Image 1 (cartoon, rainbow, N blue to C red):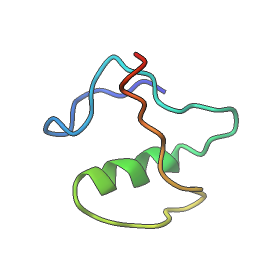
Image 2 (cartoon, helix red, strand yellow):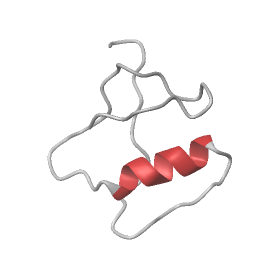
Image 3 (cartoon, rainbow, N blue to C red):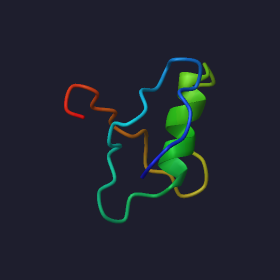
Image 4 (cartoon, rainbow, N blue to C red):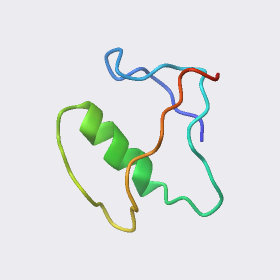
Length: 57
């Protein structure tokens, strides 16, 4: 899942996101909202936040 922008430095561009098969796109929204300081457990069919592994681009 490619993503544009860094959300004010909270995300690193050019790194892969956890895009396992059948991962709901809503998980990206939950992750982004958490990065903005809006803690939310679920949106639509989300199953949780994405794992952002910046150590292995």
